[in-house]
Image (cartoon, rainbow, N blue to C red; front, side, top):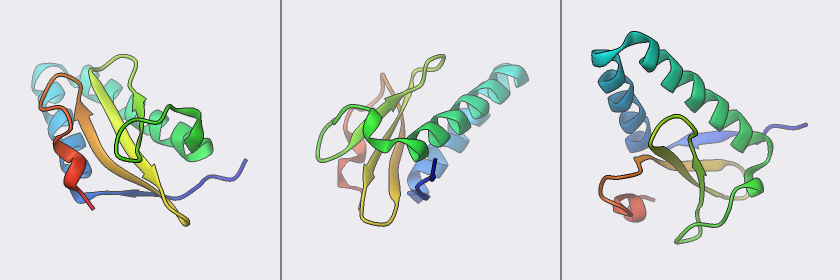
Length: 99
């Protein structure tokens, strides 16, 4: 199956990095597990971006299974744009104005 390219918004990269550091400060294995699940999620999205439900503002959302994070993304004609790696309990919708 052809993978669609993924473009990560710079703030989404910063959010993933921040989450990784937070988990690392408590447990190295949790940090590694977070990154593995994030990588798996991005691969799943790349393989079948329409599999996850429509969210808000023309986006879709993939919920991580073991961690309280979601990947908010939208599709354009050439790639999948990841707008946020959003914590599920903090500032809902803060990423809406990202372009």
